[in-house]
Length: 176
Image 1 (tube, rainbow, N blue to C red):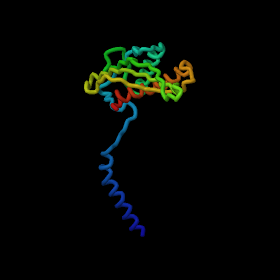
Image 2 (cartoon, helix red, strand yellow):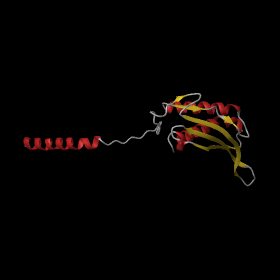
Image 3 (cartoon, rainbow, N blue to C red):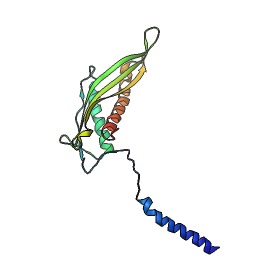
Image 4 (cartoon, rainbow, N blue to C red):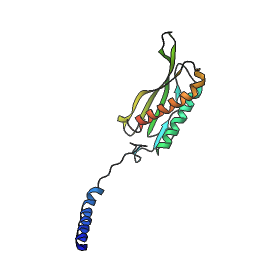
């Protein structure tokens, strides 16, 4: 009985050794951060100060958005943030900052107000110009009409900023 078990065991080991090179030659990888960056070719990024060209200007927003972008990219990539001459360039302009009534009731008053921010992005990849683009991104949140906008503006902007930065990052680095 011991020799039969020994034969089965030695065959299993032999088969394992036979298939090991086949299995070890294959690999699957998926990156959640810095997904499509070839760090042998791309080393730096320029993130310009965000311009605010919206009809309504909330002064701290452009500065906070700029800092949020820089922080997001430096935490998720190994790219060096440089003031000029980067392999990648990112320029953002706030073009929309709007409040719109929504869910109008029969008394012609809106129950909710929609807050929408639009950012125009110019992205340049000096290594691969096919990946360069210029386009707009939007994010929005709504709030109850009985709530004064000034009391929810900062909290809504924080959520909207996070959403916009993720959209921009996914379009530039993740190529989504």
